[in-house]
Length: 211
Image 1 (cartoon, rainbow, N blue to C red):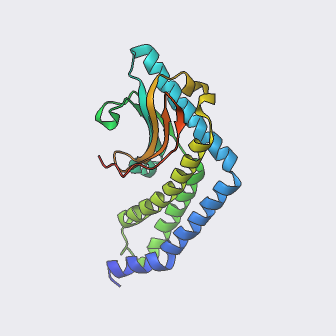
Image 2 (image 1 turned 135 degrees about the horizontal axis):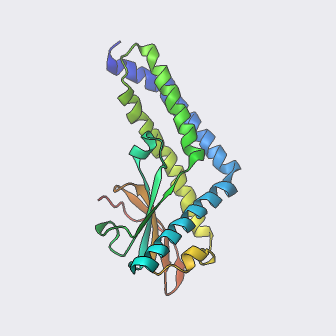
Image 3 (image 1 turned 180 degrees about the vertical axis):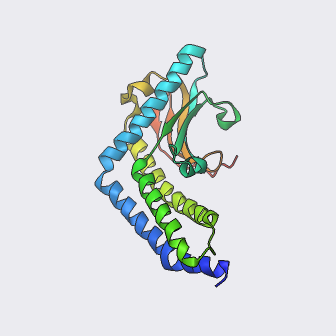
């Protein structure tokens, strides 16, 4: 069996069924523990707003127009917090960030790390034909699938709460304010939009933004 045949066999007979089972487990965990997950997500948002506010107070930073949750593959592989939360003025990524914070959904990544470890162990039966980097690339596709679950949850969360009830957000100097989520400096979706003159508006997804 050559490398390609070995990898295809690995994907078909173990990895793909296992990733489907993993997604079902994570979906079930979200369903059964939604209040705690939402609380953690909103806490990360409040902390990010506080960081931005402190920068505004200290350095007369610009009004905030964007707060972006950015997933970093390199952080996943290094077992660091998965998301960076950055705030920006109205130029978004075409300007320097006003502040940075992190969000680490360990309820998701802990299960992915366990699956990743199992995948590295399973490859050994193929007697060296499957390189660890092949497993790494495959696991990142699974990470993308799980991140889509988080994106949907985040959109639902921010659409269902009154952000003005969050003190850290309320005191923040902001312009037309948007929350986006995606891959670091890659494709992002707008999951919430707030107009300073009218308050929350109906959320919608931006067309894909690739920088």
